[in-house]
Image (cartoon, rainbow, N blue to C red):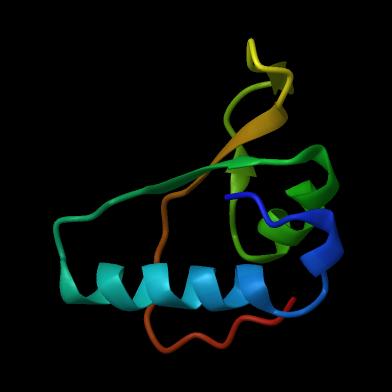
Amino acid sequence: MFVDKKHHRKGIARQLYDTVLSEINKNADVAQVTVNSSPYAVNVYERLGFAKTDEQQEHENGIVYVPMAHTTIETNTPRRL
């Protein structure tokens, strides 16, 4: 998930994350959520319960990211950025 820098700190990523959690809560078969975090957002994802699954990588088009996963999705748990 990437949010353009000019739109950071406006709650866009949080809204996207909440939408994903809502869908996960409807489907008990989902055991893990993965993201490719920008290096800038790693701390944000860690606060949301994600953990790094590999080192920082660079896609052939120049996008730098850190693979992360959230394996424990808890319903009704407040999450703050």
